[in-house]
Image (cartoon, one colour):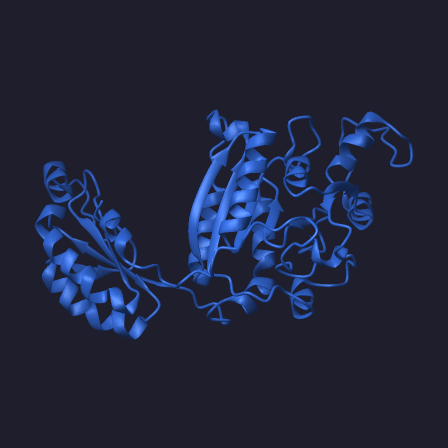
Amino acid sequence: MFGRLNQLVRHLSRPLPNYVHLSAANPRVGLVNGVTSSTTSPAMAAEGGHGKGLIHTAACLIIGDEVLGGKTVDTNSAYFAKFCFSLGINLKRIEVIADDEDEIVEATRRMSTNYDLVVTSGGIGPTHDDITYQSIAKAFNLSLKLHEDAFARMKRLSKPHPSQPNFDWETPSAALAAKKRMVELPINDSKSLEEQVVFVDEKLWVPISVVNGNIHILPGVPSLFQSMLDGLKPGILPRLTDPEGKGVERILFSTPMAESAIAEYLTELAAKVEPKSVKVGSYPRWGKQSNTVTLVGRDREYMEGLVPEVEKAVQGKRVSVEGEDDVEDGDPEAGRLASG
């Protein structure tokens, strides 16, 4: 894809210098203050002491043998990518790794050092292969401790499973121990709990554990992942370059021209718009009668001014959704020619 040529173009915003790896005794200030009271919202918590640095870069770590084995299709990283794009955060890396302690330790240490915002997905359930909490605790020399408020919320909001009609929260059992594993969190005793645990929804007992100030541990279940990530937004907004969270603009063009036919123009265009932090992309659509060219950046007025030029140069037109001008039952050979 032509988009790969644009790797030489500077990113939409400059990231902060890489942080040196911080020990557990001196972690970065958390993204937002967590809440140990069910009456405090993430927005209120953010006002009380979110991290001081701006968020420029992000990374997503998907943890799960089931993803690597093809049993589960990962949709969480795609949702996170759209989330970051909408806020103007430069998502730099997505990784999928196994339920393996050494891999989790290595990946979270590296990502915490290199990126401003890190989100993990998966591995926080009640069974033996759910090892995300313990692995991240090991990565930063922390202990796992029962979070009493999370446990209280679990007891209050959880419904007994039909297969456990005799389950009792007050009676020690293997099932109770398994449930407690989900609220035994990596805790740094030198920091307040409010900096390390976030509840984003009054209807959910599931906490977001914040480790080393920038790692946010989320569940792998897509519906939970999405709602909890959205719940973090009020705490993220104050740390963006644009606090209003307007994000990045993307303009799409449909062109019948083959990529090779417009490659020279797009190379010249990329060089022209680079000082304005605008990226040019080209994406083939195999089997279709048109390809897609994109402009991505923050300066909407400047980008809008480029539309007539680009439309003329690629002999195409602006579209709001890729493929909106596709012709049904078109000549498939024409699509193959357009993509090359």
